[in-house]
Image (cartoon, rainbow over all chains, first blue to last red; front, side, top):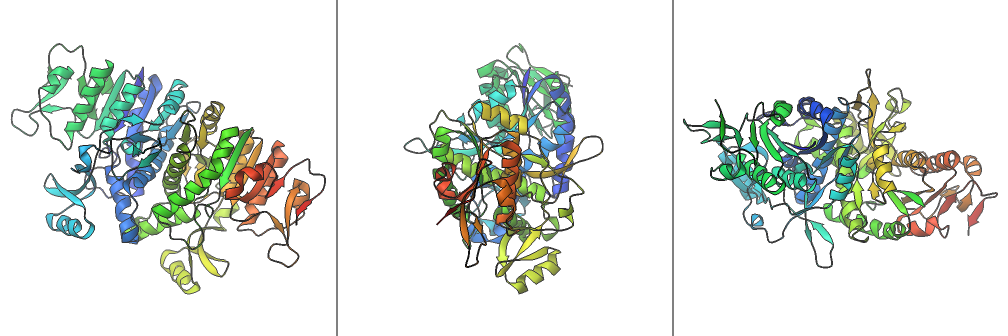
Length: 310
Length: 310
């Protein structure tokens, strides 16, 4: 089976934890311990988020030379190197030596007219108090949005349209290489007149990018790994119920928070509707069990009724 | 023909120029205009330096949180993403659409007992005055060494021993993909007991890494691109003469500066002696002409006498 797994930026960094090199490596190692058993049985492609990391690099740049902060396409590329390296090294240490891993820099085309450019919504970097956030909005011209009880910087998050390195990724996956790609949702680029491409100042949602990747690679499964057990209907309310198995049609009739579960549910529905594969959502440590339907939420065209956990 | 080209960090950033995103992109574009004609005729593999860039990332990190500066293996990985991205995008805009480019994150094994760990010699980051350099040495514990009239931070630069992603690179090059890899000389790693690998705080010389890469890939040519026209015997002296064509044996009898031309000459000799291919050294803009022997220095086993430019 060909499996695409998407690691949440939050799964790679626990809430409130400082983004040190040591913390990142420890969390990546835990993630890789969950992925290694999947690699043992299946062809595996790994994508990952970069919200906390790309925000950190922007802050580092601003602290050094506020007038020379790099645009997000370049910072996205830096995070593909950094996080890809940690995943490749830690996972490489867990799989048999003859099983090769490769991290492929990934550029993804977006539409320059995507409405997201006018409505920044993707949170990056650390959380701020209301007063700090307001100061940063004024000093740096950032867009700011609430995130739970706190505030975060938000940036444009256009929809992924086309993966430029697809044929290279396909070639390697076909040879049994474990491929780490589309990191941070891929580097957003737009097509210019004459066919050239150019990076843009944005961050693509990694779940939507992973859904496109899974579809294009004709994967049988897409697993999105985060810090919640399963998708819940009426999340946070007394009547909340965790979904075990559901069809994309039934899932479409529910509504989910835009910032967190929304893109995962959308990515799952898109992949399942367009490919016929299954999509799973759940906790990072449960990766293997989600794929087998033993925990988490599975979106499956063949689900004739909603099955609940309780 | 299979050609490995190594782009000098200095070729990607002119001396004294601020390391802004715009300057980097402009210089990378110039480099890619020199490489595109080679890609048109040959299989092409591109490596690159990262001295200025890895130094910048260390400074950005220190400016934000001095106690949480990332080790050089992680910063190396970030520069492989950043510079690889710029090269892949700019070169991709110049070659036909059906010619694929891929940037492969590259880890390279070094010997933990390499004497370089005790004798840091590789300059990274910007130039400093003597007073600034002394302050940084005391405040941050950096090793500092003279660089022309100025001073720079120096870090350990162990010799590259083994390229972990070699089979993946070989697979792609064999399919005609233009591969960007071993950026910044590759990410230095050491083997631990039990077979696992782990990154170390160092920067590998990109010319020595490129020489190993060219040898392992059985390339016919290795071209090292920098900001000087050709290798000179007695450089900086009145009797200086530029070398046009020379055998590795003849080259061995001359001596070169450790910091700049030394590693290039050593890398060229190693590759030519061990592989039978040719090695060229010269200016970035002359890449194609160096390969044809029309400018720059060619190291060639078949050179029976030293041929000079004059």
